[in-house]
Length: 392
Image (tube, rainbow, N blue to C red; front, side, top):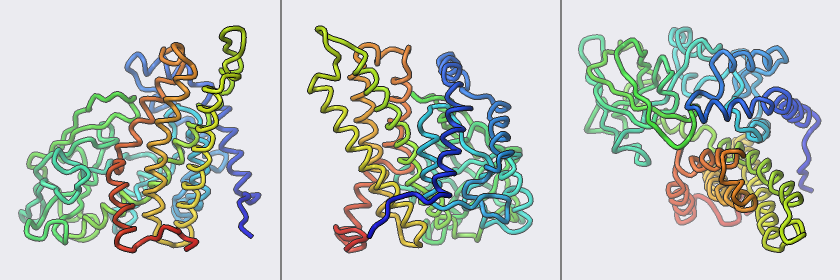
């Protein structure tokens, strides 16, 4: 028998996060909207730190951070459940005690300077691999690093770097051997901002917390002890970062879709046309029904991908399926919810247009729809995955 129920521990953690969202985050939504529409950050740094400290006082810190670093070291399934709950609000919040997974490849000295301060929230990193000509094709990196004495000199430009505006150090990927390229010729460097790189924000249709940056490295000198991992093995690290948790992106979108559908159901019962609530109209009922089915399908795609991670399986195929379905369906659902709300849905009096813009990004970042389709199809054609999935 297949058991789809949550354990008592999973349910307790899920419920704690749900209550935290309802108690601490949801009441902030009107002010967050006001600020964002004024071109300001939804949450200030001090406000975000205060919220994270409240969670930490309750023992909620470092969701997937190993226990040896003070974290909770929760499973992938539990982390996905948490992301769903956080996704039920558009308030830009994530729990503290986190560091990029590839930072755990740091040596002991680097851990003291970068990993531990990042976990504690004293430092902020950014992952710098995407370039104007190397987005989906990450192997096409043009940024270079040449060795001069005991230093590496980095030249190049990175673009659409999430967190690049505020980061005080970057994990920057550069070609150190042009002949080898991605096959042993790309190296990852820990480059502090005060080493000379500069960043400029890129104006987007989303909000401050999503705003990326362009990074410019013009003769930036990085000491050789700041190589993360081994020289030439940076591309493998990059793929570890990119594939660390694609299932978490559609998990958060899932929470948003649940909340949006609840809004649509409630509004359809309140809004009347020709003397009857629009909930009685078949056209509205079908939009609600289709959305509910797609939400449920997404839930199981996300949880199956997370379960595969916890089981030590190669979950890349499942994660690509979850991300593709999540990106496409979430955009269809928010569009239906806006349609159900009619003209009011298109106004800024309601937050639907905010969700509309936010969810659109899911089809682009950390692997576009087209890249996910390419991955899924290639896996099936080459026999790396079967149509029957894990059940055969």
